[in-house]
Each structure stands twice: as structure tokens, then as C-alpha cells.
Image (cartoon, rainbow, N blue to C red; front, side):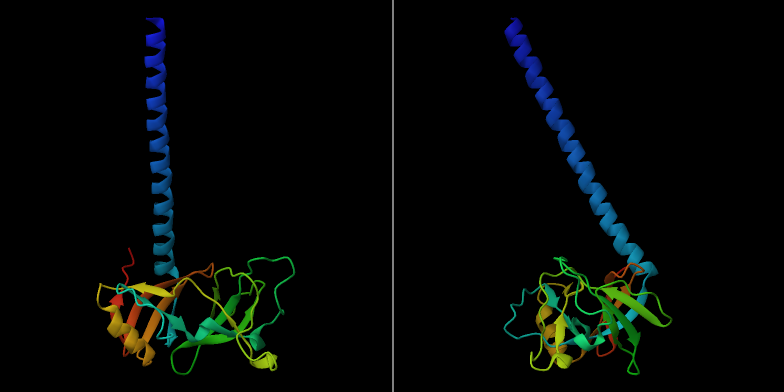
Length: 207
């Protein structure tokens, strides 16, 4: 009888521990999701809005049907804009800070970049790339002044209603699509709206 009782007690304790563990995991997942939503909402509400010109994407790129692949003029950063040279040795996943300024055509373009922090300056915003592995020039190696650094910013994909992506991607490759993004004070970018021929086609709520 004692053995049976001990076995039942052990089984009950194990079940309780499993329930507690499940509750803790669920709470952590909720907290992480809440943080992500809150961070995005803060970035959309408080960030500086910039208009970004999109660039064509290789037509061989697979269209998923429910999102548009986005490429930008600022996705290729001229090496000539670097103010502090290449990243320091030993940095495995460097982050490139890119200073943007509004151009005469209304779009924001690159005025300087650095693998170190860039101080705030009037009428500009600093956008940070995602970490990347390696340091590869996208350009002719015989002419370093014309070389480019390919970077991503975390805004290279925009979800749309299923089946509507093909027309938008076609318009993107024709130069008719632009993105209004908001850049938060920490350099993170969030898409505010997708514009077609200068008019908002999709807009993100400010929560």
C-alpha cells in the first residue's frame, strides 16, 4: 500500500511540475510577444518617417504569393561613404550604421556610413543594418571607390493579401513602389506604409 501511495504521489508531483513548467513557458512566450509588439508600436509611433525608393529584384526570386520582396537603393552602401574604414578585426557579425538625409526628390539617401556609432545630426536619421557575416564588396574589385556593401535592414519583406503580391512585385520592378518607414532612435526600421504611384496602398496601424 505504501509503495502504491508513494507512486501515486510521485505521479501527482510530476504532473504538477509539468503544469507549472507549461505555465512558465506560456508566460515567457507571452512576455516576449508583448515586448516585440510593444517595440514595434513604439517605433511606429515615435520614429522619424522616411521615404525609401525601392529597387528591382531578380525576377528569378521565388514569389510566395502573400508577401512582396523588397530591395532598396540604400541596400547597397557605397564604400566611399565609410567614415571609419572596415570593421575592426574580431567582429564576427558587424552592424553598419547608415546616415540618411532627405534628397531633392523626396526620397532619403545615404550621406555617410560607419561600422562605429554615428552621432545625431540635424535633418538626418541613422539607420542600422542587421548583423551580417563577412565583409564582401559588391562591385568591381579593381575600382574600390565604386564598390558597394550589400546590407539588409529587416524591412525586406512586406506581407499582403494572398494573390496580390504578383502585381505589386511587377510595379516594384517598374519603379512605381515606394516604402514609408519609421526609424526609431535606436536605429531600427519599421514599415509604415507601402505606396503605389505615390499613393498609400497598404498602411500599418500605429496600435
